[in-house]
Image (cartoon, rainbow, N blue to C red):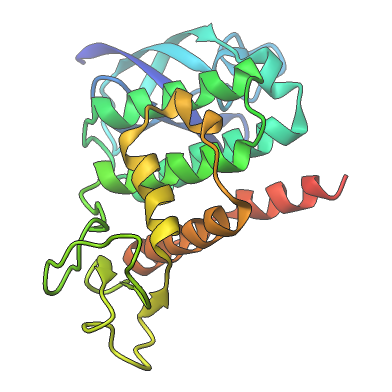
Length: 255
């Protein structure tokens, strides 16, 4: 049986039988992969501590006879201990894991997605983020862009007329994947959301800025909320996925 090595972030664990488990990682080499971990749920398992969600782990695996290959060894390179000790930041980290798990397919490598995930987790772990919700929104936008769904926001997606400060009654057409000018904005179109020029500037900032600089951006809450609505709506329109971790984020906000 052929053996191989991988380095990846543990996205989730799932029980298999009485003592085994299925571990899903997003790896640098081959993207997302699910592997069998034999005996990982035993009290004395040497693997369990290395295969916890959020860990960056070096994996040794062997090809299996069935649909899943089997982990034969694991050594965690990063635990993000500081992050795991803070419920607020941890809830956002779980969102990063969940959205990547739900929007990617197995064995489709993407160094861009891997780098985005690592950078996002490192920023949360550093705690140098005043508003993690802004980081979360930028993370979602960048993942959507990497997956090939970058929205058109600098000019009308229909007639290509550029937007400026004088632009009024702009809409965002979820079906067309971009903003539409006043002339092209169809009334009563359920797939079109109202959006201001200033909110398009917020989305553009998410597109142009490095993730580590996002939290330093100065923006009015009104325009951030509008941009957030557009990005979340566009995400759902394309992928039709809900994220349980968003409920956790809202619950922890009330503490």
